[in-house]
Length: 195
Ligand SMILES: Cc1cc2nc3c(=O)[nH]c(=O)nc-3n(C[C@H](O)[C@H](O)[C@H](O)COP(=O)(O)O)c2cc1C
Image (cartoon, rainbow, N blue to C red; front, side, top):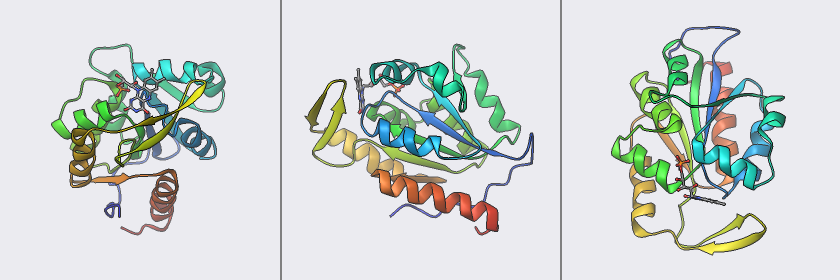
C-alpha cells in the first residue's frame, strides 16, 4: 500500500506546476508506462542515459516522443535540468519504470544520473515522489527486445525496493495498475487541494 503523499508546496510558473517523469533503462513495463504517460497532460520526461538507449531498443523514437512531450536528456555533469525543481515547475516526481540500479542509488542517497538527481533534489524541495520499481517480486516475467525473459531479482534488489518504500515523501508502487492509481489519485488531490 503506497504511503499518502502530502500536497506540494510549490509556486505557480509557466501555466502551473507540472508532473516530472523520470524514465530509466528498464524494459520491464516500459510500453505500458509510456502508454500511460502519453495519455496524461502537463508531464515532462527526463531520461537517464540508459533510458535513452532502451527507448531505441524497444522501437521508440525520441523525436516522435518530443512531438508529444518535453523530453530532457542530460548531457551535463551537474544534471542542470534539476534546477526546474527549484523554480516550482513540478508538483510531483514519478520515476518509472525504475531499474534496480536507480532504486539502489536512491536508497543509498547517490545522485549521479539525471533521475537520481531529480529524486534527491525533489526530496530537498519537499516535492513528493512516486517510484514504480521493477524488482518487486522474486520472479519477474519481462519483455526483452524480441523475446520474453524470466528474471529472478536478487535479495538486495527486493530489499532496496522495500527500504525505499519507507523513505519520506516517497510512495513505491509495484505494478502498472498501482502506478496508474497512485498518479491519478495524486493529480486529483492537487485539483481538489486534499492533502
Ligand atoms: C534491453 C535491456 C533491458 C533492460 N531492462 C532492465 C529492467 O527491466 N530492469 C533493470 O533493473 N535493468 C534493466 N536493464 C539494465 C539497465 O538498463 C542498466 O542497469 C542501466 O545501467 C540502468 O541505468 P539507469 O538506472 O541510470 O537508467 C536493461 C538493459 C537492457 C540492455
